Image (tube, rainbow, N blue to C red):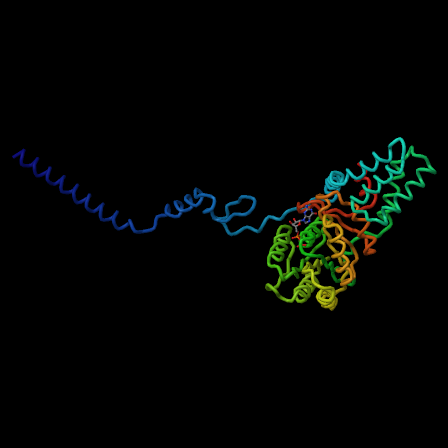
Length: 381
Ligand code: GDP
């Protein structure tokens, strides 16, 4: 009897356990298709661990934006004027110092004979100062050293070089307008001279000085130039007005000035096409851009960008541009890459316009205002 009761109890317990097991399987089977919160986490973990080329896009500063709404781009702060000038003067001394050192070595020889004067002339010509300015300089140096003695050759050379470069030329940039309208800077020059880069660098200088800027990408013949300018603008939070590829450059320039006027900015800088065509074609194109802009605001500055390494060829091109549009200032680029700083003298004489800025590298803040005294000091080391 007792063993029968025990058997019945055992069967009951096993039965209950079986029912519970089957019920549990059914419940868990039903749950399975429901999305588990872990699923999303697993995918994110995979993204983070994926090789770099499969990583989700993130901003320059390395913030993973996959978990949040896209953050506003982090703006760059352009380098301040003081540190930029110190840095770039050193760079200028590095690229042009050999000219000054060469001249000083020749002038400090015991005897300034004809051979020495010829070597001085050669040194000046090699630095692209030009034939007429070289002869003038040598003439003045000969006279002064004879009259004043050769003891102070260095300060005489400094004075004469500064006089040649033109210490009294007005080199200020006209970047602001009047009557509540923005200043308009038109940037012209042959392709490859550094025009688009210069527009970007000038924008950074103005932003560093707390001016508000709009850029016009009117070099519509080159999609790369438009994209390049857009990147320069984005980096410092400056609006870039652009048109369709091959759009009329004048219409882009017009819209840029319109946008700048509406926004009340200080300066609109317009990049232009640099195709070197015949003078008439260039005149027609740049003339139209200027006329269309001036329906809204006067052009306050026309900067001609010239590559310092191109010598006589560059000067010929510069002349064509200056005949096509009234240039008010020259930007001499790539002075870091050659010892041809003498071109400053020649181009100012040729065009009758001051060098206002010099490009001293490919870095975003490698553009400096030109100053005759500082330039000659960098030369003489
Ligand atoms: P654009 O065709 O006249 O618009 O010329 P870009 O602005 O595209 O410049 C042509 C090349 O010259 C680019 O590789 C620039 O980085 C370079 N460049 C521009 N200015 C300077 C400069 O002052 N120094 C050096 N070393 N390179 C420069």
